[in-house]
Amino acid sequence: MNDQQSRQQELMLKGAAWMTASNLISRLLGALYIIPWYGWMGQHAAEANGLFTMGYNIYAWFLLVSTAGLPVAISKQIAKYNTMGEESKAFALINRFLKLMLVLGIVFAAIMYIAAPLFASASGVGAELIPVMQSLAWAVLIFPVMSIIRGVFQGYNNMRPFAMSQIAEQVARVIWMLLATFLIMQMGNQDYVAAVTQSTFAAFIGMIASMALLIFALNHEGLLRPILAASGQELEGGTELVIETLKEAVPFIITGSAIQLFQIIDQMTFINVSRWFTDTSEKDLLVLFSYFSANPNKVSMILIAVASSIGGVGIPLLTENFVKKDFGASAKLVIDNLSLLMTFLIPATFGSLLLSQALYTFFYGQPQGSSLNLFVWAMSFTIILGLYTVLAPMIQALYENRLAMLYFVYGLGLKLVLQIPFIWLFGSYGPLLATGLALVFPCVLMYQTIHRITRLNHQRLMKRMLLITLMTVVMSVFTGLSQFLLSFVIAPTSRWGSLLHLLVVGAISVYVYAWMALKSHHLDRVMGPQAQRLRQLLRIS
Image (cartoon, rainbow, N blue to C red; front, side, top):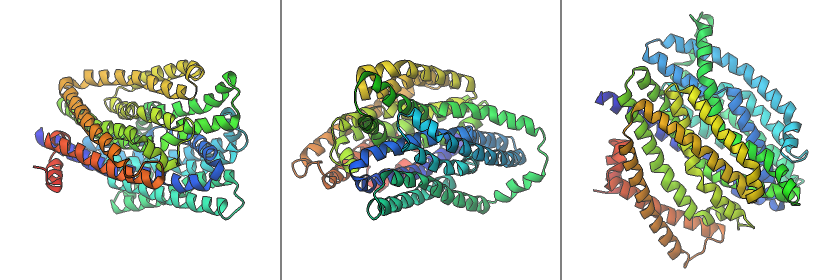
């Protein structure tokens, strides 16, 4: 039993390391591009970022719907059949779903392209948003097939190709969008809508790069031939297996779309509802939308992406334990997974809040109006968003799909009920408050369900959370003090000054927190032998 749990912890940590690294690199690239991009947009920067985000909100929802939640479900099914010694079923199932996803990609890409005028109108913005959304439809064409292949690697607990494909996708995307934006805004006719359209079309370029790497990896791992060969075989009970996998997939798309759907609700309601209560112009409302949604998302999604990667890595392992009815191992895996998540997410969120002025100035320049306050409010809900992204797939790994969907409906209903009155009462802060409150409810319910099924040691988990919180408080004192002292040398009021604050204060904060986590042996509980290697590297006894 100890050997099995040790193996699973090693697999989880290895997968988490790859996914954390790839998510950090790809998300950092996705955030750092904003510095030159925002500058080249000139006086239209906030509006351009608002249009970009509105297009991406709809696009991201189409990505979720077009894959029907199948990548995670496929990885879950692969883990199940491999555990049962029926690998041939997994290959046949993959083959069938690759064909299905090819059809879904064509269908949903066409729908997004044709319906772009409708989505633009519903967002409260004019024709400027239409070409932006249509340019993203090309990426929807490829994504479903690509996501299934990523799910295959996840099911085999081989996260390296998955991770490398994310990096390749982001590098190709950023190169295209920066090159196109520079040519249009600095050397061309300065049409900022055309620049935004090319920036969103870059998603298609990134998909091509990612797909090429994944196919190469499939062939290298010896999986490509068996998957293709399965096309000529009759899969015994094939229809039943497809239906079974779809049943597993639907809850993943429903629960996994919560954050994206909430952002779409904000997009569809904020400008339209604000017109009922204020005489603010459409341009100014688009700028406010950019302040509370587009700008903070570039930073907060870095943290949430890491959270989702940590949560996703443990799903096949949790399913494996559940199929074997090993609830002790399941409970330990849940505790380790949540501990690993919060070990990163809590200090990262508080550190971001303390360095919010430097973060905002570095990415967007000097804060204007309410931009910094909205940035801080949006960042403060990161822990709730990150926790939801982990608990939702975790409860489904325990085959509680019906409850997962029910809890999602509760959260969605609360968001819809609060949205309009909160916009009326709190203006641009309203959507943020409505999202935060609407996600707390399902998080509590999902944790209670996981606790009931696995009988995890609640006190052990709470002790770890208390220790993480105490270490975060101590880290925050050092963060605030070092930031205060550095301000006498250079203030975070310019990009270079902000960068210096982020590097110096950030390095101090990370070292202080890492020192405490290693000295207290907290990291040993979630990282195993890797913690001792870190102690040796940092020369901590």
